[in-house]
Amino acid sequence: MHLQHTWNEYLDSVLKKIPDIHADWEIYFLRRKTHSVEGKDLKLDKKKDATREFFSIRVIKDKKAGFSICSEINKIPEAFQLATTLAQISDQDEFLALPCPEQIKKVEVFDEQLINKEESLPEILINMQKSALFDRRIKKLRNAEISFTIDEKGIINSKGISLYQPFTSIMVHIIAIAEERDSQMGWAYRTERFLKNINFEDVALEAGKKALMLLSPRKIKPFKGITILSPYVACEFLELIAQSISAENYQMGKSLFSGKIGQIVINEKLNIIDDALSPEKFGSTPFDAEGVPASKKVLIKNGILTSLLHNTYTANRAGTLSTGNAIRTDRGLSVGPTNLYIDNEGEKPSPEDLIKQVDKGIYVVEVMGMHTANPVSGDFSVGVSGIYIENGELKHPVKEVIYSGNVIELFKNIRALANDLKFFGNTASPTLLVEGADISG
Image (tube, rainbow, N blue to C red; front, side, top):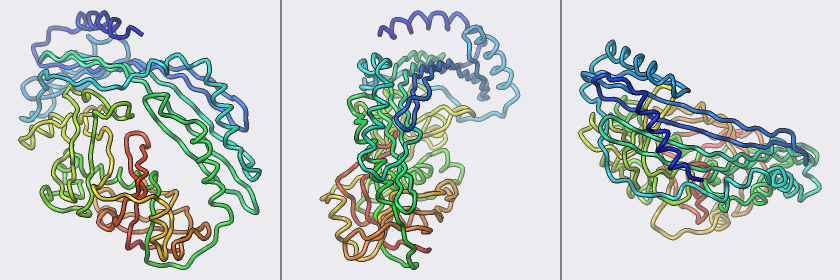
């Protein structure tokens, strides 16, 4: 696809729409094309195609900023006028500024093979569903979905930035229902940039195995012991930590780590890394939503908080440099991770070896209610689905179990990481062994 050539022509059209406003300005452009198929119980139910075009306009004049958005190129002049008007009536802020051009590194984020696979999606979807039916106890399949997306992102500003990058992505999701005396649901999903990194059969098998694993659960008595967190569950807790590594939240006093830069904040053996330049990963990008070069950075090193995620504004406010972590939201600019993952530098056993170390605990495969966790205090109380562990063996599924604690204490009590680092979207974790878990029925 000759998208770069098309962008150059399109850029000329956009530049002609910008009025003479005597202020600093920025245009962020997104064009998204999505093709998806959905089905259940070995059937194809829906095929959908969607296209979205979006312009975000920012104007900064006299240290005052105004934002506006539009969905058509012909409405850019009108959007600029609105942004200019809003800037005039907004509060002055000495830290407002636009970034200047810098050298950008190339990153592999576009899969040419993916864009030619639309016609084969229905067949892939049906075959994926067939793979989930590997056991007679799996009775139903729901919400099987595959979607391909092409994102074109462009940024231009009055400082001379002019950047463009196309991205591809593929999302796979499936739910399997297993029945034997009771009914249990298992689900699995993956999101990748490149088709070769998705194994549809593995995703289907994961959903089916999870449903089977949870059949015939039993109640257990409350105890304080160990949890083994599956990679997906570990990622959910890591996402809670990620909110506190945002400089925006840090500066607003909404971070668990407020005032703790340079201090030990989690287990001293752990590192938390954000890597935008890892090839083919879902969160990878050569530049952020302001056009600042993206990079790899170690945010927590050996348990010590060494850095935060910054955009241009938060960096100016902190007297430092942007880390290339600006993101776009419905409210304008914010800060977010690219590819965030947890790691250590020691020996990594298998997940099975971690389980063998547990005298009494729970292998957690799913949590319910993570949205109720307090991102400022770190306190959480969530429902849990998983398997009871005794004397190093998986014994039986559990039901009506509550896992309570504090996310900072959880990360301090991580005693081991397995060798199965797995990405879910732009967050990754291996299986974790966590001590001091408060489990109640």
